Length: 190
Image 1 (cartoon, one colour):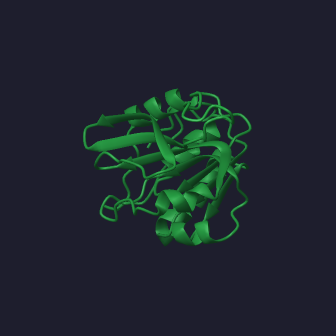
Image 2 (cartoon, helix red, strand yellow):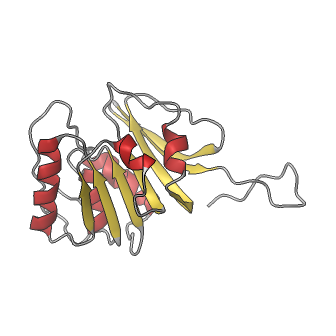
């Protein structure tokens, strides 16, 4: 997989061949980082279900101050550590454990961006967004990738969404309550 932007642009990231590892395609990453802004200077990012590390390494390449990659497969987690060393990724930390375990304990959050790209066969559990909410900064955003369109539950709104082939991807944020004194008024968008 090739990093497509930032300081590590065109650098290769190698990962083990496994049917469960499915790096986010280049054109999807390009769209996502157009949505987020090309420069992520100073942001903290959490890449749950990191797999190849495509999203986390892309964020670090674009200036994220802190990136936590979480991967439960031992071989894939070892590859993430190797790639972080080869890239000189001092801002990248790898957690070799289950993503849901990380959400149950202190991760060093809050995070400005949380990447959720669980294995398609597992799907997106209804409470996953509620679990990541505790780790999300006040104005943070969640990127969600799946094989079908996602309708987030109460408390969330879709900022952007698109589809590329079999990949459906969404940028979400928590709904904000209406400002005081303006009952029924919609909160301003970003």
